[in-house]
Length: 394
Length: 108
Image 1 (cartoon, rainbow over the protein chains, first blue to last red):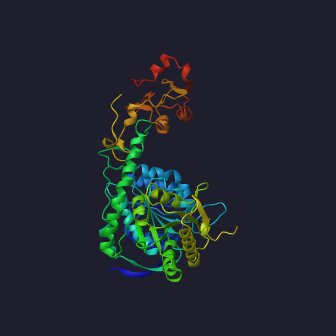
Image 2: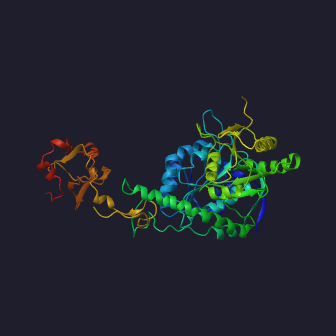
């Protein structure tokens, strides 16, 4: 029986890890680590899981340890945040290249300098080319659901890639919300067992992992990864559907909200899309703006075709970026715009960079964003690179 | 050279058959070569234990040679040898005779 409980995003993700009962978890135990691992360590200490829990001296080591364990055939998880993810950098690529389906909740927080611990997508956005699948959660329910589904997605034989399940720092990670959790049996039946076709500990059939592959073979290995990322598209949808049959909560690459008749659509990811849905309702009511929200749940693989279809004939498209690529703009903006290029009706687009370092993005600010988009709709056009900064003093 | 495999003929990810380094000459960038004085050697196996490339060849508990195909010339064996029977010599100065002397062979 499913149960309705109150948990922070961290506790929700940790509870999913408890139900996954990974063979190995390696994690750096202090800042920038969050209470997510603290909570999981309690499950280990209380004997609620059978996990071999390895406390390591850095995130670089944490990721290295789970890569080795994953190659030996173990189901592995870790978690990190902010500078911790940055320190893992080198090994993120090793995990993906070695095809280790490690599942890692990432609590999205800002990178230094200046020092800041609050919500910002710069950490995981920076890792978008590391070969990891990336799922973003709107709320704690999704954080929990995404972590469970990440296991099935990553371990699918056609995929075999690591998965980041991102949740917004503080806004989700430290805020208590009501969510529905599965009973252990339902969760574990859904998860199944992990079987690696060939592993480091198979002494009868020894293999080499991560060998030298120079000009003659490196390229082919990378294309294998490209193919796996492409295969993940169907797997993410199938797993989301199967999860929906089990729980009533179906997931896909995207979640359109009131997009069918929308003229002004705001594309975003993470917790702000929840605020945006409410803002869309209110500006429809108060301002007569035909507003819709397109939530990107899966950022890698990037659902370009699905986004182009969902945006349909929208007159104006806005993107919400809680990260910046210096010298370019918001990553979401540029990828959404690329998805639309070559289409007959390429709507004018505006990028709204917001919330860096946890700057608040209240309902009124999102409503204002919709009104700015409605102005662009009236004019019928905007500059080619219209980048606006929400709530910035300048 | 053998025919290169196509993408889908390769194993997934980075896995490949074990022991493939035996086919490669990874000792080619060695600058200094270890030369052993087998008369002084006491077969304590310290060089064998410390060698990071498993290049000390041992048979019947005796050091019988050095695998120059894989030895990188790091010199750890020479430092660790308790009877100082290993000399590190610049590759270009190593004679054919000295090189032959490190080929695995019975030692009395």
